[in-house]
Picture (cartoon, rainbow, N blue to C red):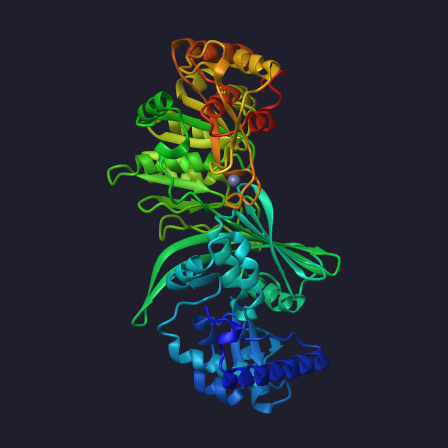
Length: 579
Ligand SMILES: [Zn+2]
């Protein structure tokens, strides 16, 4: 990624000339009361462009920039040019509805040049490409997130979005916040916590906002309502005109009006999931073996519960990765697809019928959903059953209909894995009863139910050993009563967060999940079949060896992975009743 400093003088002059030309085009657009577009930023879609043949586009000084069925958006240089007007009425005679925008002469030239590469380049709407080589160079140059600030100050606006994304990937950030005020403030969410990254001059904002809106298929001229969209980040390798896609990352974009400007949030889906395997979820070794055995069963229902952002879907992905084998047919129904696993058919549904979250089928030809149509988990699940998969992942059971189809599927020879909103593992039983599932069916269908939360990992570089005071130690012992622990808790050193450069002074780096899992045995099956209250099921699960969320967390604190404070933050104070 060249910096502004590297640009030659001649290129700089050319850039200044182009900027002036753009300003003139923008002024002329204002005068005519038409929207203005800068094709240095606006991604040109070669497919759409070909609506008008190149020669006619050149003569008429008009290009097609967007097309949605009968609605097209054209870019033109002069709205009073007769040849241009003739071309527009010709398009309207073809039954097209034409929206006019003003572009500069050099934008027109750029679009016309695009015709030649039309055959080679894929359409760029909805996709942003970052070359792997650039990403690697960037990673070598930037060793620490704090070094990003200087980079942003030296970069040209056209590369800004790529650099912001590259920085987020480097930091393994889950989302990117771009907030304009006197300056643009850039923040990344790292390990669940927002961090200030940089601020840069406001002049870059408008171009950045427009580019993001176009990429995510949002309305450019709407500034007073919130908008949602998505685009795909492709990490590519270019070689002899060939483009090889190394990796794709889905991005969800939300734009909110605020005071005078709009704030932008880009959520990067599935970040950190890449290295995901069942072994490094942080499951205790005996529990891991039991789970490995249980998910190999050909049918039944597996549920993971927890609030939004507790990593429950990530765990399910790890399960699917473990089961992924050419002999096993796995289909997912998600909203949205957060992480793509090769060899698995992943489909996406939406229960909202807004244009930005229309249903998209990721695997080609597997399922057809009409755009703008409501397409629920339950409907998708029925459609998928016709494909006779071995394993089905349903993103979330959130209504009665989905719950019923999921139970039926798990009773008829499919392994169904899903998530559910419930406070803990045993509470999921009552939740399913509330969805109208019969106790007998549930008792038969259950494989195992689990719950999880995320806690932060102590920074290994700066964590500080200490002995907790007696009151705290007693509470820890009380909570861990009955569990076999090899270490002697009385003399054990626990750890507190410190502060160093590696963790940016936070004392924590990365996250780990804490779990509770309960499996079906005869006793539990009997209790569920008898429509028993949660409390009694919980008692039976504990008696059968279930380690609770808090206990699992405390065991991780005993191992020095996290702190007592962190477990209290997530599961409540130790002296209080367990969540
Ligand atoms: Zn540290």
